[in-house]
Image (cartoon, rainbow, N blue to C red; front, side):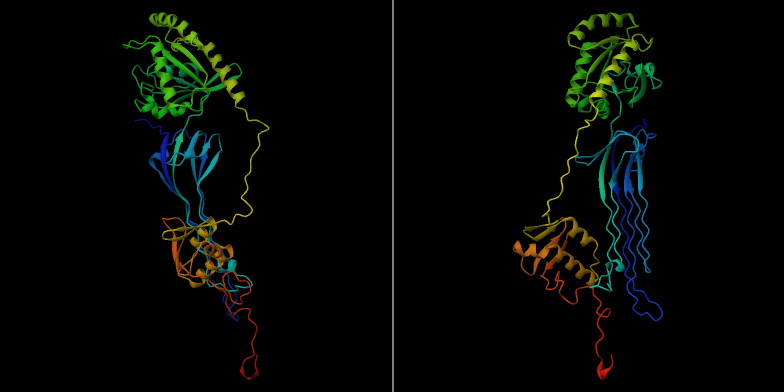
Length: 460
């Protein structure tokens, strides 16, 4: 059974943030010492990092569910909760992270490249952090935010300079073994190679990698054989080498027909038309193979292909082939160098962006925006003070004014958040929300900071 896996679906979730703490300092002779609740800790992130020692996605095939730890809740005495550790997923270089719909999120190439797949939730603020001159003793704290939950597809695309393509048993693995120190499995039956084999080749001062792409047969781009599974490994290669079997005994097969079939499959797969091609006529050490190579070489050269007669078994013709590969690889590398004059375009948000939208729907009015949705997730709806604090925040943001502008009336239904987990309530405009002149906003403890009033009998 092959232990190479190059495509998996991963289910990840960041850790939840810890809840803030609502606490009041209580010491002898200090019955109301003030709020001292600490903040909750942040939840852990799920991060993919390129590790040069990893060559397959097999680990995630066996364990597709990954979740980071949760942050710890805050405590009294101004003690903040501990932050959770991040989970690091070590992936091979060349791993593409995409959504199930095919949207590419990250393309990780090079040791140390990383991407945060799922972010941990923020920790909730304790009542000490929520205290202000107008709200001196909050009787509530904010909840920690839930961690981000995502399903992503990890797809490995081999990072190599040259791809060897051809029919099964054309000698691709033998060619890799002859030109490099790689030792792939070699046998005399089709589909011996079940995984892409990589080899490092040196030609003069040039050092480049060669990949053997297995399993290309007619219909490979539609899923026949193993081609569809491994054609993705050709995408990053800058040079394609057609390895053609000049000594095949199969009926209906010859080097020209094989070349046409493989080119058709590459065309159907798409995105490879600009890659330079080289043709390697293999197995010329066999008398019939030499005769076939002499027969088809003029036709191939007429089509514009550089043609090399080689034998992976006797190493005949491998040196000229390696230098031809190196020349094209170096040219491709030079063309791929980034333009030093390239600029990074920054697109700032409009200065009049309110950060939320209010849309009228048949069921009511829906409020969407990162801040109002985050505030809703942080609110403990079992605490009236916390609900009042949320109403004040929404009013200061301008949500109530916007609701009135779009025609909302008292008692109408308002939904904050997406369809699947929106908070729904009957809306009644507040009188004091967002009004800084009001003497006792929500969340204020009138016992603290109030002026001493004259008591009956002239006492104070």
